Length: 244
Image (cartoon, rainbow, N blue to C red; front, top):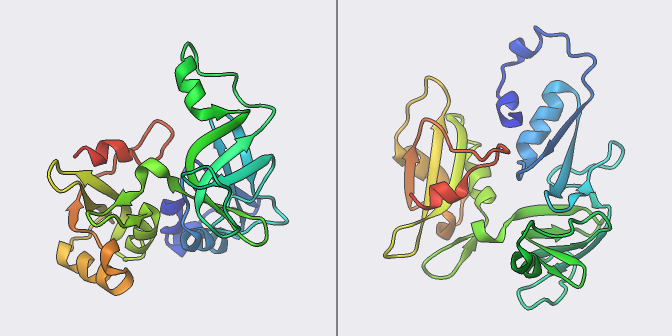
């Protein structure tokens, strides 16, 4: 929704009285700092991002006086950022977010084994990749399970590619996933919804990616679709796209 608002023409925005609008809040998915800055400038507001999970509720949030676009603010509870072996990482490194909060769920309903997989010594393992900057602001990267892994083992965060695709003036929505092909593993695929009335060739998108992305991050396949599937909470339904 916020991405769509950034694309509104100025004359449309000016036809409404938005003088009482001061704040916008976003959560549930990775936001593009570039698009969110456009949103702030177009509507003369402050955008605050929030990070939370169903099992924990809110764990990190921006505030009006101290917000940094591209981050979900500062954590409001205990946080560790760990690698695959469970070791804590240094500031600036990407790892899994593990939280300890007094308001954490007691457990999944009638699923003690599943609960034990994510809760260890009071710490909840989110499965989310994050990074903390030198000022203590937390950046959400992506769920570990949605990181695209190339045939050579290189890892790609989908939002990096999607943010580039959304810079193309003809692109309204984009999703970048590793589609399982049953033979070569994950095929880096870009699903694209064009702006109304636009018609372009896949080659133009491919050329645009060549100019703005490292070789290994470029989509190996480009598909134009009428819409991108979403989950009930409005996130890109990457699981359905991965299965093809």
